Length: 70
Image (cartoon, rainbow, N blue to C red):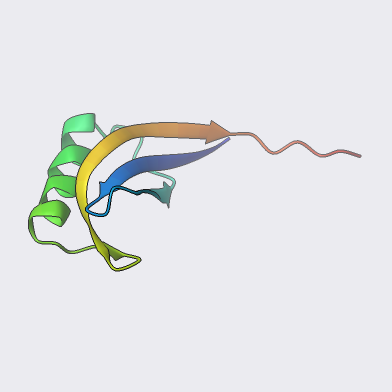
């Protein structure tokens, strides 16, 4: 099973974007992810379509299974 860390972020222009990171650490906590995202927001380190990230909407881990059709 594959895992993806999904982070849905609000932008300053009112739109949203999603950051996806493959294979997050199994023991990653929400507090650790929020700490990293807070630093990104504070330092305006991420620009998406001309707009900086303003806030975190949602963080979750998505587990995905690949299934062959044949």
